[in-house]
Length: 100
Image (cartoon, rainbow, N blue to C red; front, side, top):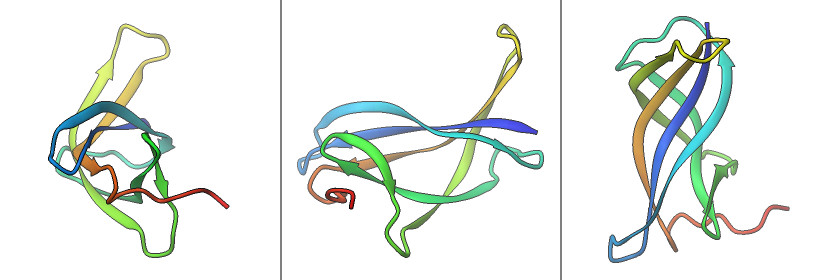
């Protein structure tokens, strides 16, 4: 099946004050049928300034659970979104620096 993977990301400061919330789209993938509670392995998320990006450094893999599956029957073609469990990134702790 064809899925669009999304994840709600809270960006907070060191005092746990919310700076912003974004819906990060991991992209579209063709995979076997999924169910709520399934686990997905994907690159860990990080921050480049205040933008959510993949942390592609070696060993930075994360496991997220599927929290919800939404099937949008209004749009054509039908879109199936998979929402991964929300995550929180702390400015200063999850910065990955500049890309080389």
